[in-house]
Image (cartoon, rainbow, N blue to C red):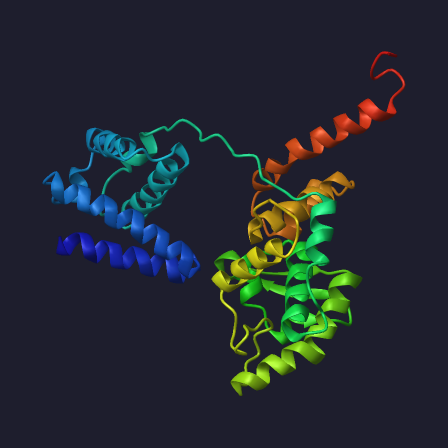
Length: 304
């Protein structure tokens, strides 16, 4: 067991130092690895050199017996594959048996998004005469207007906002930074909030924080807090849909592509490493194009 823990520790250091992985990524890798190490103990496996394809297939069976989705199983195996690649590099093992294991590709779920009319109702739900309403309006404008992740939004500081050129400096996954533009609506909401509502919230805590978004007590808001705010917005409208930060990210991408933005630009704005991550939105644009075609082309459908 001590040998297992030693390699897990060095792997964690590898993720943090060499791969510059985020704390979330490191946590998930260790969760998957801890589960696998517990399985090896149960099976009496005392060394990583003893792990073979039969052991991995048995582990896959235990995962599927837990009724895990294909996506969850694929993620766990991907974590282990990375770990065993590390062990091979460190010459702890000769070959990575995980590279010989193939899994059925998980079906990519269709991203949910909001229609323009639904978004407008959310914007109308905030009372911007009060500090909380100003904060909520600015928060919604930033999430929808930039498509950033909730964790990226939560960590924004005043210094990250550059009104002179209309951009936000975003710290993304793996501590990678990117600049994301914002429009006039977001600019107006941010200026009102920063110069009025935020100052009033800050007075409540007496703290001198640089965090952009604050909670009702004047302290830096949490990602959970952002989700609660969005839920309350929906409750203040006649909407029956579930709204979460990632749905606003999906909506941002979908609306851009529907209005003619190219895939590469959207990829860069979202901070996706590969274009394949952005291509999950193509189903939406295809539906949109088909609807426009059917409505507009004189030979698209027969006369009734």
